[in-house]
Length: 528
Image (cartoon, rainbow, N blue to C red; front, side, top):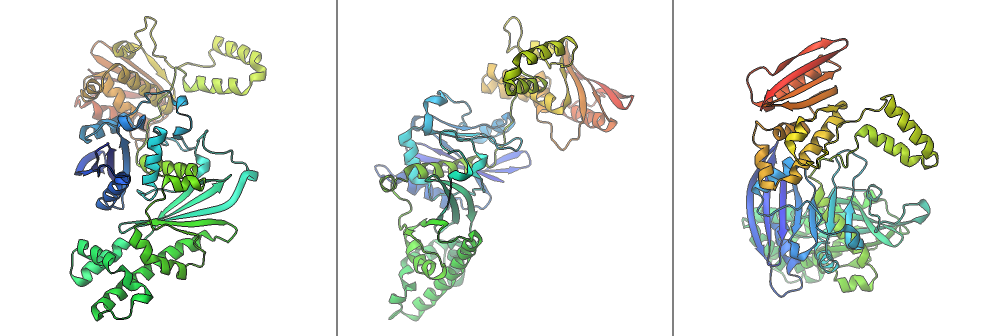
């Protein structure tokens, strides 16, 4: 997987291409693209240059905007990934909101958690003026977007309520075409607003045409692109008289390739199975000469009336506003950006507050049964008296030393189940992170003889390691950490021991496991 990181400043766009193999990150290429000063479309042209320069199929994109131009750019990463990326990125990935989100209202878009576990959370928040500028410049740029359904999103101030009677059966098609890549974006219109539901990269693009022309005529890609644009008028039937045989051959080659390209587009349109009443409009964006070149083929080959050809890459905000479409465009582009930013990055969902999962179940019961609150209170009291609900440790100390890791580590933690264990250990790591600056925090993570090192490793234990632990007790005494617990099977304790042994980097045995009843009790000691 490759990540393309973009940092957009007032003078340039800094781009860095990162390769990820297994858990290793490495820099493939860095490049700066200066913005053309005093031009309205400087950002647009520069973004197109970036997109054209890094034309890789497996690139995912992380985008940042400098603080002076927006409130925040947020990619909530697992701390391990952030640590690795921050070591090589030429800019910081922000993680906290410096302003109160409620004050941003509709200027802020949340791409919230879906139903799947470990789903991404992404926040895109900018000043309204700057957001509109980005909207203007990002509509035609797609970086390997994946299909996403509006129903999965939680955009409280943007999305309407999705009730059946509010659905308008209309589809809007955005076809983005340029010399490097081509996408077919499908948007659904609900209550007059558009929401992208699908973005499909076309298998055949104009870059294929350029490459084949270069190979056929033994010229460079740049020269082939220049010749294509210079001779684009030749494919028009009205210009075919009086041209040289060489021009005719070149024209025939272009025509043949364009017909293949249109066939690919036509296949995608046929998959949509659109009827006249379902289709709102088809809008085509792209490099002007590409559109000029493709227009007659599109009209001839696709049996759907194309209502709007855009020979500019984008519509201006004024045009969108005149058509009462600026909000739609804002959402479509912000969502496109959001999806492209969030796709490759997973986040660890830290346990919030001081409720254990067992207590969270009680809280959920409490919330959903407001009418029987007195009965719930009585049940809760009785449950505590008889020990029906065992709480996991809370890490707040009586003397307000909440962020003292040594005291936290000395406190015995009694945890049930893999999920609970991970959440609680991640909470330790998160609280430790809050009390340290990033340099100290990440340097501590590399020191093998520290509790935080082991907490970090335990919190990121690979899911491929099959561990079914029903009880876990972690404590630190003097210069050693003791890990006691109970597993339902011997395989789990062996796997867990092997993992602890590997992360401790200690060749000496760390302890043993004893079969107890139907399960296994283990007691491991790790020197600090």
